[in-house]
Length: 407
Image (tube, rainbow, N blue to C red; front, side, top):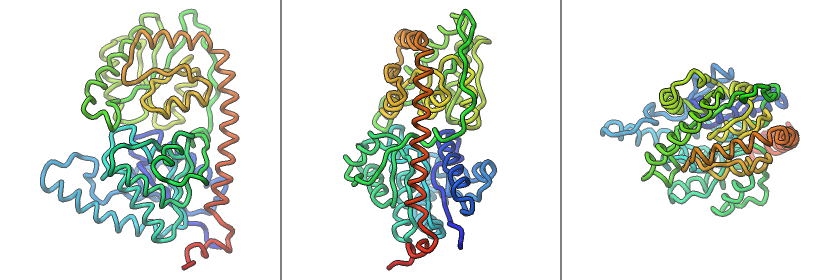
């Protein structure tokens, strides 16, 4: 029997810990349920993926300057040529596989700044290539949101339509795709793939009279795709409000541990460290979601912005307050029983945030019990997700090649 050839696709190994955590969850599933599968990746950071996960990896884009702003004629021409070359590169890579999995991530949304000729174009090439070569492309546990920009919306809609399998990380994601014209009647909703990762020991509240450590997850936040005109103003308000909040915690004698979720967030950490100037504020160097979970398990309370920072905190059972920049954060918090503890990232009010923080801490013991129950439910649902994946993507051996050869 020929082993299944499985590809994984996305902005993986590019510095975003949430994306890599989703990949890790899918690789864990494949190694447990399909140990003979031959796996490789087409991704943003092939060197990192190959070194960290031990699978062959190919660069997502032919043009190496894809993520740099093109201002010179040569760079613009290089990007344009790259888009054409990637049509053939993507198709050639896809056709070598029986199945290609896009593991989680917000690939069907534009809640952060996004250009249609960037990742939406790459995803469309993937899904179109899958349809043409009869390779099953699966969007597994992905995030989606309504998109106003017409070119981006069209590419996302067609990508979803061309995929052979779709599941979502929350109900609003599925609703958004339905509103954009995708038939979602057979699409299921499961918890985010990161909830399938191993969990470190649950944290225990500090006995310190002054209060224990607080983990603050920060983000290089400039608003979303529709906020480009106000991006710097939004960023300044976010940074100023978060810095004031951290300074107040320090004045109360609370140790604060700053964490990130993407390499670009390091500038925000540096700005807060410089502004507060206290030994009580330290910065973590997390290389994975496992590292983030260790940091958050050691805290009494977490305040975080990035979506997967929230997941890490909730997964280890630490009471959490979300600085929410998109509906997905609010939906996640409600699912985990903490819907009352969301604060807008676009308009951080340090005084109001502190009130919510103190209210959260007063209910800490109760919320820890709630999180324990919700995490057990999430783990059960993800086991169902992986069972469904096996049924839909890995047919019985005597059917495997028939899928690709049927005219």
